[in-house]
Image 1 (tube, one colour):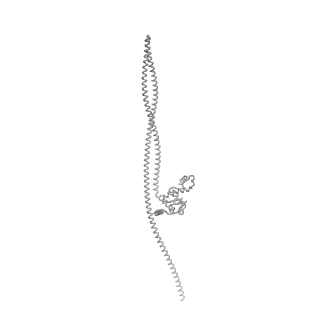
Image 2: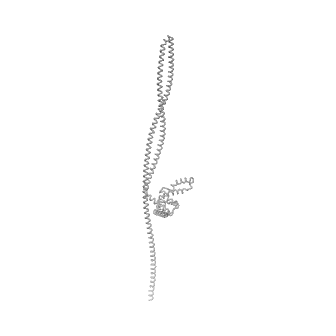
Image 3: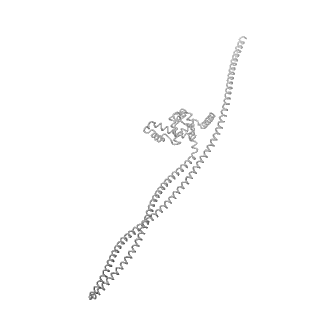
Length: 451
């Protein structure tokens, strides 16, 4: 079974080769048209260098690949593999190997799947006719489909350029988004620090306000106490002055009576002692009040410094509010940029969908082309079957014509032999006639002589 399948595949391959095969003169003409001097002798007795040159011309025309174009890549590969021993593999050999790989890919697209290195180094007439026939038919098909190929190529290039543009824009947007995220993170950190500092300042401000209220209450009490004590001191001083004036007025009357004077003096001494004690108490109270007033002055200075600190805190809070306002503005800008990024992503998704649709259309066109190619292949198979039938019919008619030709040749040969025999008989009869004529003439002459 496998042998039968292999035979059928080989038979189909031979039929395909026979269908694609071109005459030698046409192959030579096509190769000469591309600018390479090439004759029938060059095809029938191929020279490897010249054949390599022809292959190189075809590869340069179709895929823009020559030994010079693959030389940098092959040299880099040799440097990676061999290191400092690059010259172990000669440059011509490695360039020929790289060119062979590119040429093999081209020939696979043309339909030659069994191309080998020996076709470059030891080419034969039959292989060259097959390979050149497939390449020339591929070039003709490509030229017939140039408009469609250029259209799809231009579409793919436009799509590729648009994809690259969108990719670059996406990269730019991602960079900007990363930068905005970093700025947002730094702003969040600063905002957290500002919020923490604001909370600390608020707590300190509340403590200072409470201390200020306590100090204000205490200062109010001290002021009230100071006013009361000052009023008492003024009252006592006025009383003391009044007593002294009354004492001066009563002095003359006191001198007249020693006992009364003594009693008055004792009374006045007592009053004086009491007044002195009261004055000392008032002076102590005044000094205490002065000390309290100085203390209140210091406290007032502390309160003033606290007020200044509160003003600074208020300024800092105002700045903090401004920073919050700026942060809100930046947050709005960030949200706007985020919306822009989302818009760009949406636009990118839309373009991706468009690209997918174009790819689907391309795939559909490719499928249609494949279906047409399959249809053409079916028609080709039908034509091949018709060709095989015609070939078989032609071979049968050829055999019949050969048999008829042999019969005709045999008949002609028989006729020629018969004609030769008849001519020989005619010559023999003519000779006999001449002999008989000479005999008759001789006989007549003898008869005349005898008469």
